[in-house]
Length: 116
Image (tube, helix red, strand yellow):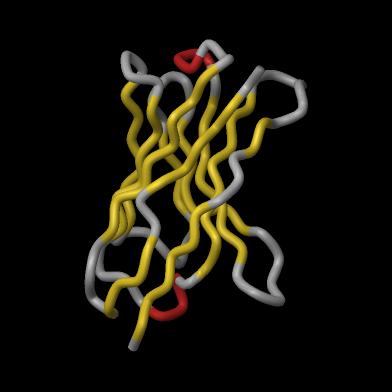
């Protein structure tokens, strides 16, 4: 059974930092492309950052220069380091795993709230 379990969310003041983690089980983590998405109330889910199995990264325009995605294949954990947080970063953050044309796996999400 595939499980993606996010953690590390919480309440932080604007300008602060958080590190999200996504622990994977039930998949061969190292060969999956991984990503972080977020969804704010009343908005569509959007890409925050992605990292391929080979380590190439891609970021949403709104987080470039502030967020960093990285992975530890040995521990099967995906991370998102978030710095210089803004109130508009407030959302539920989801972890996603994809491989080939298979349907993606999603985590249950973790809430990030940034106060002004």
